[in-house]
Image 1 (cartoon, rainbow, N blue to C red):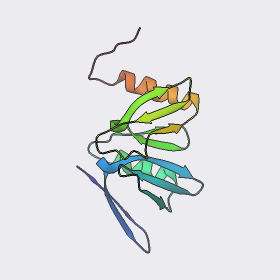
Image 2 (image 1 turned 30 degrees about the horizontal axis):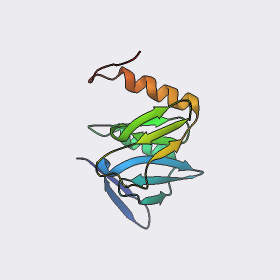
Image 3 (image 1 turned 60 degrees about the vertical axis):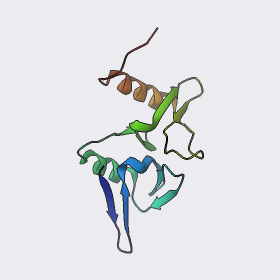
Length: 124
């Protein structure tokens, strides 16, 4: 387990990377969404989190389009027709279920996850 520590001039936010489901852009801010359903508005743009996640020893985060970074560990279903990304996990709050994202961004995520090692490929 690794810890994400974000220090601003007024606070320190410390969260286990295992508890982060996704980070969503909101203008010049970002919303950090946790497994327990809590959201924390951060005064950083999405590229800040992308750079921080790249420095992790076990990086399970991937940028999806322009507006979201997701924790691959919680990705359950990518549906291109509905343009939705569904999450799952034992510790995941019922409040966190799906995100609507652009088709092209979801298609890129689907291809990237399909190419990763491990598991069977059941494509028809």
